[in-house]
Length: 407
Image (cartoon, rainbow, N blue to C red; front, side):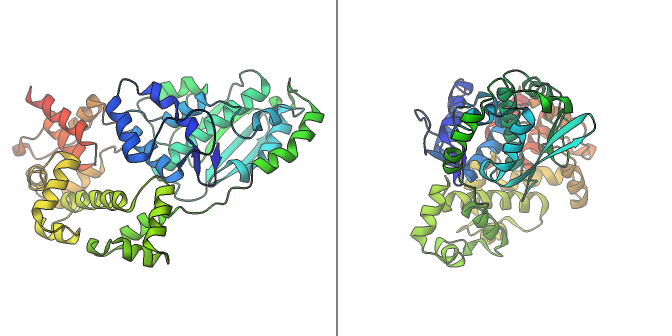
């Protein structure tokens, strides 16, 4: 169940079975994002910020719709008895009205509405801020799947949607998502929505029980207090780091001063959200280093200084661990392929950054559609690896592409 501080860890347990053949990935999720085994439901949570990072990492690792898949595995008995409560309503329309009444208690950071136009009723979800962050979109894709499953549970049978709109980008696993949701979704829309025939609203619910509904309402309202929509410390710290003119200023003391708290308090707040100051600094450095090397013209020494490294060697060591390339090697290959910076910008911005790192054929196809200057002799696997690095793919995926090019 969603709480003001995160998602119950119990709802993430199916990942252990799903990823049983990828132990290294599970280890990463546990070490970096706080995933851990739990027995039963309770207040053992993954912070919202950690959940967004988890969804983004799994998207990059070939699981673009893991949020929706997890929603389909959810034990509907979790969540303060909401499933039993809604099933006690007289009709599906009454259940939807109760969901609207409870929307501030079950939605973490967005709005929910029901629109009836002629033969269709449309249930709409809209994130209220930072709507284009991939992790947040993937999370809302999962919330929509959970809501659809909850309505079907109320009806005690499948409810066949007429259409589904998603804000998430198109993926190469759209057919799998369609099989889960019951219809092929329309991607890259302005909101999340599912449409049903209006006639379903009057459908009596088999569990209808007015006495039980009245008895459960007070306890449900008590167990599901309204969620306070606040921006997490992690999100605030990301914004603070991004605004720093010089990364040498990225110290815990400076950050604590900016947030008007002590360093120990800042550490505790970040830990409760499943992250740490050093982890966020490293993520910001990684993004900045890639941006400056790919799209900038500053020398590597200047980039190292700007990012707060003691010297060029320290940056080179970190960059190699992040991407499997040396900074000078990446810049040299990019310059050989596109000597003019504007041509490089145009080529790289045309690459679909939602491609999965574990889909080499998709990256080879992307490379075939990009045209470096002929004399550069960068093509096929070598060009695909270069594109993967320049767009921030995981180092293991980049290395696999480079290895394939050597055979």
